[in-house]
Length: 285
Image 1 (cartoon, rainbow, N blue to C red):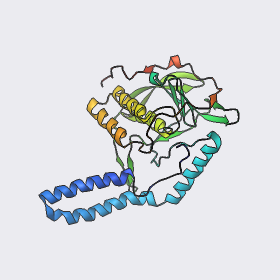
Image 2: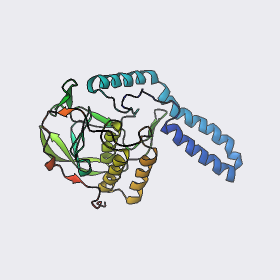
Image 3: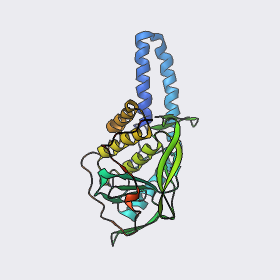
Image 4: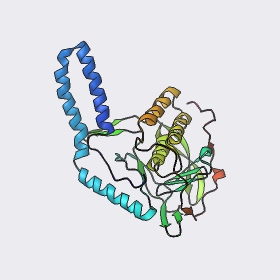
């Protein structure tokens, strides 16, 4: 599963599925209430489909070439490739971000953008070097990189004029843990409501084919992080249901084994990172 070929369908993707679902709903309502609107709706639907299709079609060859080059680089460096995601890339972090999750105790995984180490998650850990012969990986936390994600998926470019998709909602202050100069520091960011949850969920989904966690665990963590951020239970459950039913359809079954690589770089003390426990009551807004 780790070495599946790159596949980015031009037609079978969330954008077209979303447009199709809305179109069927509108046509059904028109057939029931106002049949004369069916023809104008069909013409309008063609324009909407073009708005979703053209941004994916123009420049597609170059994007595929770059994605395949990145995939081959991962295979050569790590011995595995992460799952592909087409974006669009709207948000970024330029520092290592930490999250403690007790349910991942005893799990170990080391990748370009994600570390899972006995319940400690580090996203965007920094520059890395790998020796596949010795089975060792080193990280330079003092040389962070930039990790980008799209927020809550799907996000669909429309005629290069707008980005349509699942909202991340209003901005608020979020406490986070970050690595600075090798030390764990508490910080505060002013992000949209769903950003912390979508960041962690996207990073876990990126390596869901090779990391030692099951899809339902990543989805459950997503739900609890939304609740901890202050999202209402009903809305958080709707987001959870969407990823549970439609997210990572290519990955099913039990979790992969722990990483065969051994991290020789000292990691920050996991005790400094507060735990997120699935069984703990969620905080309201």
